[in-house]
Length: 337
Image (tube, rainbow, N blue to C red):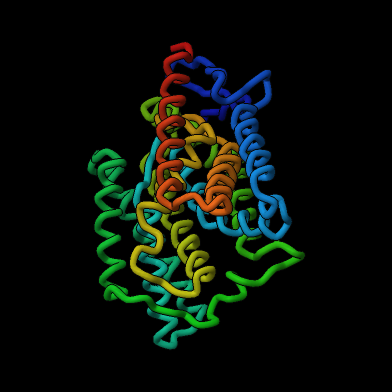
């Protein structure tokens, strides 16, 4: 039976000594959660709106949200996993393999339902393999999943044989159509974020994730089956990677070498980290992750509209990730021990 409770508020972290760590200046400003992140987002939006007339249109803003939907699904799974002290750098590569396999299946004439089921099962299995390696070999999650990512990138190239594979109008209902004026991709992303947020806030599973991230040894003493929780978390991360891969395939209409992979993964990691999720575990919020996803999406869109070189988009993601990592570490040092 689990006796560990989650943080009393979104910014509180439980440690081995039972102290409550209040959020530092990187997470709150004037008592408003994520105020700093919101302020940056507002500044970027205002700047982009002033510099280009096409940014503030409803068509463009909906398109931005549609484009970040894939990253949002990956980031949702990564937020829950990182809250528990885990890390999966292979989610983007898992999505790449899922995309490649699904594209080949559909191109070969297999049904959409069969393809979706197989793709999700494959992605979940990949996540479980990561979980087994991390849980039972004590290899650092970063090392294990980075190795898996490299392997999966190679597998994706083999599956595609270096060629682009089109799926025709398969999955077009997901990738192109709208419901109540909103892209179906965005609706799926919102549902995933909502479910993960509710799980983290109101379920025993979510509370146990906070406890494991706060202190794994104390979590074990509290009666939490840490190994099982880790396997479920990595399996869930894999399943969401598969879903993200299918969403990406439906949006692009084809799978090509380089689809998904490390660049997609870094964007997801950056979104989660700048949203305030602790790299060491024990703290994470879906709201912060949503803000991080939207911020990176808005920055990329603004750079495109301003006709800035695409190379600067990669530079911007790396810069934001570095700043967020430094802020995370400074907050950790400034918190009472």
